[in-house]
Image (cartoon, rainbow, N blue to C red; front, top):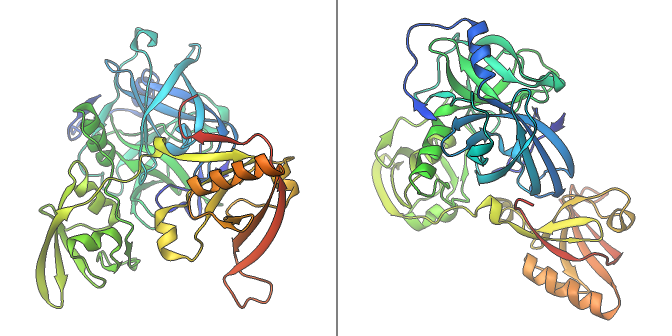
Length: 436
């Protein structure tokens, strides 16, 4: 098991990543857990992902999880983003008692832990069927569910429990369940016994706890899939805003910093009352859900006791699979998250990861460092860093890196520590977050 850091916040505190026919609301008739699990065996797959150059908090190596078929005519399979990865990788899926088949990523969401895979439909087993999806509002607490996947290598197995609640305490909104979700279950279906429909994608569990698993609600996935099926971009808008963290007993969405939404006229202190006509929104996930599918956005906000209507166009978030970086001397560099850059001081390229036993590790470079200059040449973005590195390769084969590291200096007088490190340059190449 490993800790997953999601693309929107680069962190998912306390959660351990563990790894269609679109249906309507569930019927009143409940399935037995035995029937639900038998059905799940006909649409669930094992997913194996091998990451070569890790981006966005992925780790190099091979990881395993689950996924499930939602549209066999298109060969579409849904899973978690942390299972499919956000990096240069190869992916395969396998059905029960079947050899692995190649898969590719159609879409990886920059906000939700969600990815859509595709396989060649001719490679699908004859008896595979689409999972039936519950695209309505999440079930209430107490609804009986089963989680299906491959926990700890126990392939195509499930566990039964209830929906414990709905939470956005860890960033995006999740269904909480006491159905056991363990390593290898990520990406698998959470099935509601009332109707036998999939109500969520198993995503993670709370560290050192029992009965605190989490699943991505299916209503958010359904909208993304529907937009993709009609050829529309489901990417969330590029907001780069900050919202005040609401207390546990409040659902007010109040703006701390407007970010790019300032172009709409949004101001710090505004309370978001409605988005594109959708009111009674409880958290950021619901706000972004209401914005998907259109670059035109209308916000109704409460400001100084008045209701103010704001309207305009917001650009889409940067595609995860278009991300570009550099691999050199055993480390991967790319541009840091725009949200981070708006909050903290570093203006350099981000060290996504450092592989063990490499020149970068020997030079004491660490993951999450910022390289702000190379041989005294500022490196505000990945293009500048690549240019400076290529010049250093041509000149001496070595480079002096100016590094800014979060966490503070030893005197605790500053939030960053500064270092200079000499690095022998080896195997410099551009890398992209794409299928290999």
